[in-house]
Length: 273
Image (cartoon, rainbow, N blue to C red):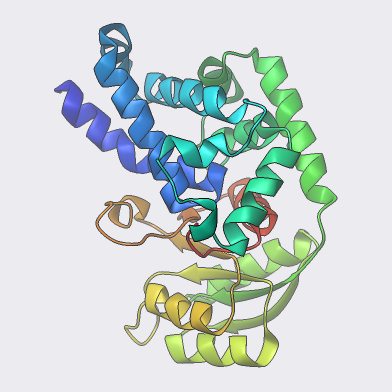
């Protein structure tokens, strides 16, 4: 397989990881672009990408680390030639403040081993750490999650068994399920009545309506973190339209949803930066 095609096949998943790590489609994509530009400018780095998904994430990590670990967290937005202070909103300012206040390696290790389904050893390759270091970072991140405040959750899912599974998972994490919905109309009504702190949304709903459209309606009512759950995340990560920040692949594992919930609540909104 040609290098370009190989990178293209892995790119949707790198973009998913980048936006989950940064809390923003625009910021995440800016880091991905910077990674590809660095590869084009460095023949050795470019050739390393022939090794598959791990070298691609390694290249991304170097770009992320070089910007994020600077003393000024504003370097994140600078990578993409981002908006000026006058153009940024409260959400962006809040997100950048949160980014600057945590140890990013904790969240990175957690997302690599859950959302991206790398082993601890593979995550160690990506982050240039030992397996034991990665395991320790994941444990620290989980402890950090356990200290976070519980919230109310709306579940938008038209499959009853999956909805029940998500209810059990959410309550097991200490959150409250404030409602379930199987259609776009039900979802909007539930948000108007309960004002949840988090939404878990399927893409295809019972009446043929779209979970994406339902969430658009919800965000017009209130800014709330949203996690989409779908069997085909790569179909939504095309770069052709505004895209979800948080995507979990079906069939999902509890640890993956747990990490996504933590990251979504950490940034406190799913509106684009």
